[in-house]
Length: 186
Image (cartoon, rainbow, N blue to C red):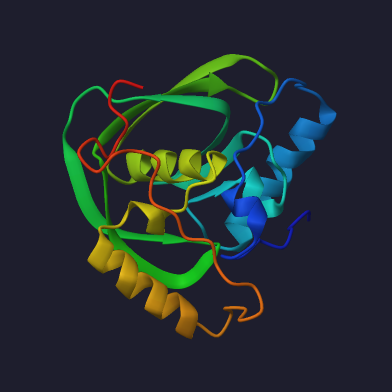
């Protein structure tokens, strides 16, 4: 078993954009295994490499009995339909907040061997893909909350028993404009 510790809110690695994968080698395959086993042991829907302290653009997912991974993802949105519902994060354990996301997404990237692949997601799968890709950009889901929800989320995070008072959190606004919260045109 290669279950690894998950980095928690406040760890700077979670705010650092990950680098593209250039070597599709045995080390990448080990990382994908570690991500998958850690995600499944933690009963998560997804896990990104920065959550294990690794600054590479890789994530795993386990949604509706579809298990996989994606390397160097690029997202496309086929429409402007949105969903708003509860979202959580293994790096912010035990807390869930209603978060707006796109309802549909097409993610293109590679598998662990460097073969091109595409994932078409709707609903929970679309939410997961967007959430994990955000991790690769140094963005946490609380950054996507409207100001009132973000304030409430920060209050609950500061009260969580896992929260480290000696590591003040870095909270930033989403890099996507409020009027264009999903980066249309990217």
